Image 1 (cartoon, rainbow, N blue to C red):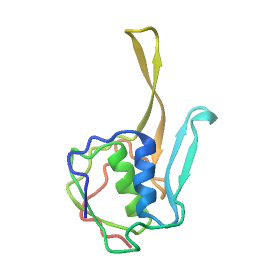
Image 2: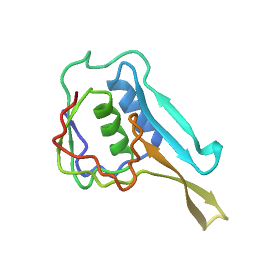
Image 3: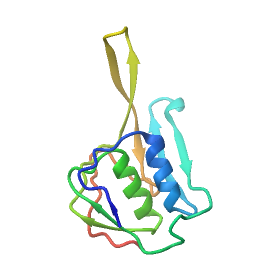
Length: 132
């Protein structure tokens, strides 16, 4: 069991690493924005730390961003069953531009998409969705 309840997320690379640890192959997440440079795609590498053992991921309304990337990757690759409540639905890629020592500007530059092509932004992962 992987408990992502009330997990507000974190860094993209951490979500990719956790997903890759539990997947043997398949897509993890893609990003798409208005400019070509915003587009990225992440794939799992061979080797599943649990050797294909059954996996349940717990999510709720507090599961957001990187936690939703992990949940989406495991669900879309038929690797886990999601249980709990719908997740938050935060799938925007934000870039921080430092203006000076005390000020910064945070811009939304792209959106996250699950391996099946669904935008995480505003489309909360349904719980109790059975993996394939």
